[in-house]
Length: 279
Image 1 (tube, one colour):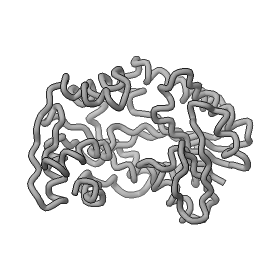
Image 2 (cartoon, rainbow, N blue to C red; image 1 turned 90 degrees about the vertical axis):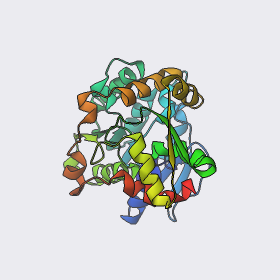
Image 3 (cartoon, rainbow, N blue to C red; image 1 turned 90 degrees about the horizontal axis):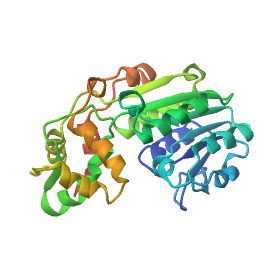
Image 4 (cartoon, rainbow, N blue to C red; image 1 turned 120 degrees about the vertical axis):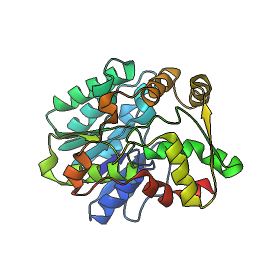
């Protein structure tokens, strides 16, 4: 049995579906009750309280660990989640980390994630670590303004990074959970090309078949909007990357191709599959 945390999100949902379609028993974990594919068990748990994960881990052989905001919650102890998995007899853990542990290792959130990677390595379980850069699904931040005003408002309109489709992260995670060859692998996950916010807005417009105007925000305006849904420190970290990416953050990684045997999907593909969110 494989446990998927964050099972209702942009990565967890396609991962849960892929594992179920591969014929595996799957337990989907999310904070609240949610619909899951037929044959998949659902368990509600809050990862900021590691003990709440214990019922989901009973009988599990593998765990996909996605912490999201739980890593930043007051009093959170992500290392306890790894300990819970080891105590439950889990054999393999695939951890969703971040490219920032390599490119910007000294921010508090990066230090915490690097420490969690080290905890996993020392746990005695098999492991694989996924380090994606920016997500194509972050474009959903613009969905409401596109629906209501036909506008994308974002900072740094002509500065790009190779954002990745979350479905490709899910596909790599599935491979790491199912295939022994990926034990001990550390994979940096990017899309196939550097793409700017202005180019993303053009791809959304093409998917919609209607014009979409691009409006460039100042950094201050962007931080004020982002701080409504994330800690201000994390908003600053994100804006630092978006505004002045380092060479390692501009690099198109070969790792999706290496694991899946195909190139990562371009942003235009993500926009076409998710166009309903912008209508």
